[in-house]
Figure 1 (spheres, helix red, strand yellow):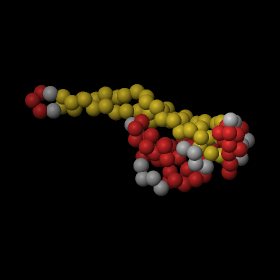
Figure 2: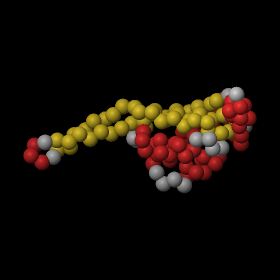
Figure 3: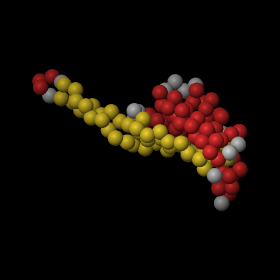
Figure 4: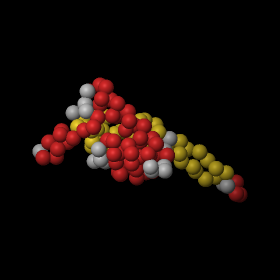
Length: 119
């Protein structure tokens, strides 16, 4: 059984979040949390909160064993773009884009992950 948690409209560029999300895919959940604690980026804190929520969902809603959870997927997608303008010299302006992103972290028990890989 796969359990997921999502964070929507996170005020961070999807490219910056993907760099950290790639590092936790396939890791055991506890090891992924420890790794995220020591990555000095804002996106690591955001992914850590989402991963903690996915683990809590698995434990409380589906009675899965927390020690056997593995991060199967960490998906990051684009969301809305907030556009601003910055005045420049000679009456011109420059566009500033502030990107938002959606995060989805999927965890599953280790035995089920091994069965899916074998199939």
